[in-house]
Each structure stands twice: as C-alpha cells, then as structure tokens.
Amino acid sequence: MGNTGFSLALMMALLLLHFVVSFSTETTPNISTDQSALLALKAHIVSHPQKMLKTNWSTTTSICNWVGVTCGSRHQRVIALNLSSMLLTGEIPSDMFYHLSRLQVLY
Image (cartoon, rainbow, N blue to C red; front, side, top):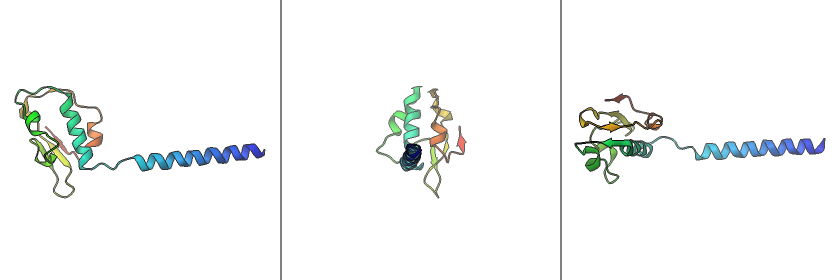
C-alpha cells in the first residue's frame, strides 16, 4: 500500500511538471508568429509571375510594410491579406490561420 501511494504521488508530480513545461513553452501569437506564418505561405507558393513576394516579403522589412499585408494599428498584427492580383499558385499551409489569429480579411 505504501508503494502505491508513492507511485501515485510520483505520477501526479510528473503530470504537474509536464503541464508546467507545456504551458511555459507555448508562445502567445505576436508579430513574429505572423511573420513566420506569412513566410511559410511564401514557401508554399509555386508560381508568382509578378515576383512581388520574392522582392518584397523580406525579413529585413517589417511585415506591416509587405505588399498585400495590412496590420491593425492597435496591436500591430496582421488583420488583412490581399493577394488577389498577384496571380499566385500554391497551397495555403494548414496552420496558417491558427498563427494569424487576428486575420479578418483574406483576398
């Protein structure tokens, strides 16, 4: 019976440790996660005849200044993407909308 109580306490301590580590490693979405999501989108584009993303979407420039990207003034997060006139071909990464948590408009 004594070993059962110890084993249970050990399992509870390990579960608590796992929860604390998992919680502390989760990141709150911010402008950096928005940038990562847009760069992942860029990597999934297989054809962009106008080369707008190649020449404009650069880590040396704030994503709020990228062509087709609109950031909100309050949180400086991506709220709109208008890529409709760029003739893009490719896939939208499945987790893009999870990371662009403030996105309201997509063209």
